[in-house]
Image (tube, rainbow, N blue to C red; front, side, top):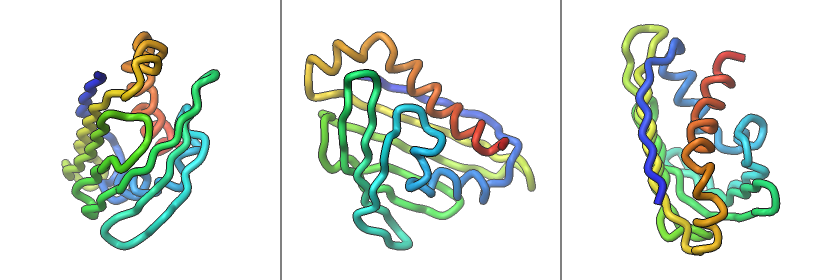
Length: 140
């Protein structure tokens, strides 16, 4: 099981940060190990996506429902794939016009013991790098 929580004040408006996190189709452009995102269903309140991730010889696909709460929160509901469970929760709180308090929580466990063993040494670092990739994208 991997559980990761990060809070950070980011020097960007809440709308810009929220829009980046909500734009799941563009994740392969800047997120490490995210190779493809296919939108299965899109509404104002949620997005159902099929996400392909890969690292070295490990390639997996999962389906999730991304729940959108404009400028407040984005949560992920796991539907199917290689996980026993997967929870992701982004929270956004306006600090000032150009500063936002961002809270990121991720909790997951692979179903396969093989995947757990193969990824156990680098997963927490990988999650940290993925969160950092969002901030780098905001600054570009």
